[in-house]
Image (cartoon, rainbow, N blue to C red; front, side):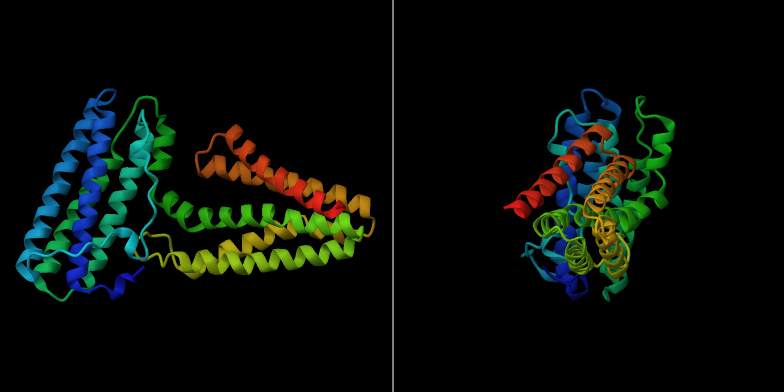
Length: 318
């Protein structure tokens, strides 16, 4: 992958053409998927598809004028900083609330791309076109956010449309949840394996400390290096990395600290209780901020935690 700041003006225009072509196809799929149940919304997305097509034509015309006929294939996955999109447009039937979120995210990301690209280009014609497209994408963003559906409660609409909440989820909740899940689940096996194998609370505590802190450092660096946040609005990479690393370590330390209790049986009972609290917390966060149904979240988290816990115990007694 290439850093966005290392792209030449030719490569920036080629990437913009690729982005507009992808967005045009996504909106076409949205329009097709919504036309039966939500014809007005389907028509809106069809109009947005036409506008994206117009953007692409203007970009191609300027590219041809500046750099000739050959347009190199540069896609979003070739450049750091873009969010990986879930292909919700392939699911039938389409849910309007899901489409609203996806369309809003697409327009925010595309607008940020044009704004950043315009600031770093030196060619007046290129900068003017990129500025114009950024303004038009801002209009698209507003239109996507204005989509309504009777079954969607006013409170949910209001919550979804709050930019501050979206930023909070992107910058704080997502990296924190990823870290908490990894720390709470992945450290279960080594901690309980050491406890069962040695029957020593101190040995289990040392293993848990090493696993938790090591996992925290690893997850922190992985999150920080995965996305520089320049195009996605996910915030400073080292802030996200710090949050992810801290929550990873916290998730492991939660069921490690009970092994400071000298009595082995008491320590095991307390540690197991802490594990249940951790899994319940993860389930609540996934339900509250990721719109995951409570039962589904509990089953997913509980199944993963149970499998890792059983693995640790079986290894410990073997």
